[in-house]
Length: 275
Ligand code: ARG
Image (tube, rainbow, N blue to C red; front, side, top):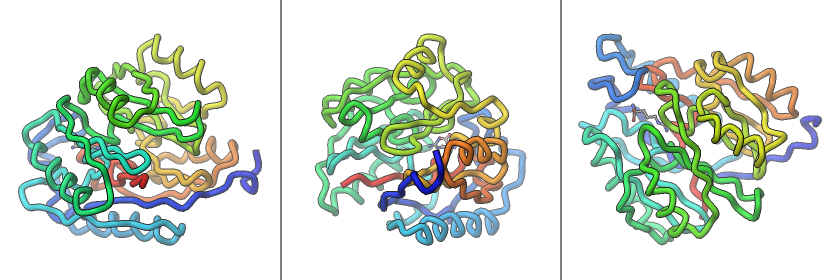
């Protein structure tokens, strides 16, 4: 498909500046507490990411950073919203527990119906939404963070069919480092991050998906944010950028070397708000 045929839809996002970002503990294989982080560069790269979204015409809200919560910059994990309803997060690890309340306060101050979760789930880290697939479909990951029981809970909370996908490679511990929505009905994913059965399900549901390889996934190439046309992605994922271009999308590379040290990239830093 030609780029002219792909159309962007204006989005609203929520981001949290990395003012207190650091790698103080290790809860995923990317985090190395002995590797130095350039805090100033992290903030600069984050600001550039934010400006990129604004330049593409999107609205970005900011959640104030809190001291003592070094992973709060990964705003995608704070909740998951569909059509004005928000399913709150409940983090797997105690180091991140308090982030859920900060996100909850943001939604409760606005025009949202907030559903308090009882099951462990890390928001858009493990949930993706395809509004144009089968009338609105939720893809849900489990295996490392989100509890499988949260999948039926989110299905009841948001009233959309929810497909459980089993993540089997610890390097790809969240769904959003293995799979992303490219537009309302199509996805890009790295098959090797999923169990054989889940790979079969993805092939069945998304026969025209863009397929990424291990190198793409290791470059955080799946951790993208797309508006249906422009795909904002980690600049290291240049091979995947070419595949996306060939599929008619417009790759928009950004550098996020510092935030990668916490085990996240573009998508991890951005929660989409679906009012
Ligand atoms: N250090 C964070 C953690 O391990 C990184 C979270 C990345 N976020 C994401 N949506 N994948 O929880």
